[in-house]
Length: 202
Image 1 (cartoon, rainbow, N blue to C red):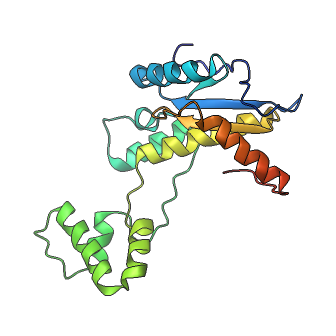
Image 2 (image 1 turned 120 degrees about the vertical axis):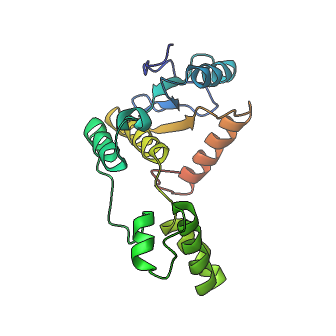
């Protein structure tokens, strides 16, 4: 299957029978502009599963945002192209917010230096067991890759839900599972179900 194809192949026989109208599907997400990664992933999974998986073209947020505009314009282009809305309500998300909130920072600092000063201030003024959590959540810039990955996984999940799948295993294109990995995962899912688990996402 060439990049762009999302047609599923036959379901793999992984030691756990699929319900008759709710099959198991193994899907790998990749981007059209990275045919090298697409082929490497596809070749690896075919060696394990034969045709029992499908390749799914992911959302390329970087391409959707374009290259020849300001950051604000790129976000708007991304939203228009993908139909999503990027949340902008974080208290501090850009360097200009750092300079506004921390007026003691020297205006001579570069953007990178100002941002690192902000991180150091938070780390110094918070308890060490809490500052790391805050830094990880609030001080991490959302990237185009983050948005594209989230939208890709959402689209795969929506497709599976619409088709009534009982179970869908989703990989990204850098995955190289061993021959034992998928059967082991499905055994754990079966144990979870037998224990009365009613999960939707692992």
